[in-house]
Image (cartoon, rainbow, N blue to C red; front, side, top):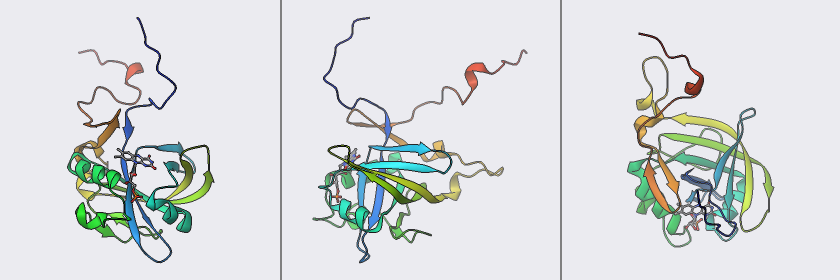
Length: 190
Ligand SMILES: Cc1cc2nc3c(=O)[nH]c(=O)nc-3n(C[C@H](O)[C@H](O)[C@H](O)COP(=O)(O)O)c2cc1C
């Protein structure tokens, strides 16, 4: 199998693409789209986002040390893209992307009503590895849209049509091809 070598760069795809809502101490709010986001730790629940200091949202993150990760869906892909190409310096993204702020339980930054999952986060550590600052944060509250809950209390995120970001494109998830541990599961004989 022949391979072509690329210069070192970010090729870890696909990734979640999320809308991160932020607020400053004065109560001004904004939304920034982030693909450099990840899960850090299960217990305590921790996540990370990487944000360039040049972003308008950056000072808000630094000021309050809080943010909300709002998951995106096919229906929200256009809004997520908009929040990733326009700056809060120039436009009111809530209004222009038709997104509704909802008061969060714990953090100052509002949740996005239209998002199926809102993850309230509080920054515990910031690092400056290079072009982006890395914000390590503790998850302090999670809200999920009740329309994706079943009668047994299970949450079906797939029904919200989550979107992933891969090498410059947005994609639906496609068909489910397995579940956690299926490779070692015994197949029932009929
Ligand atoms: C798909 C996508 C992913 C992005 N990921 C990041 C990211 O991880 N970190 C970052 O700093 N900017 C990222 N951006 C760029 C910012 O979202 C963009 O510069 C935005 O306009 C900043 O908004 P603000 O100036 O209102 O804060 C991304 C943009 C898009 C479209």
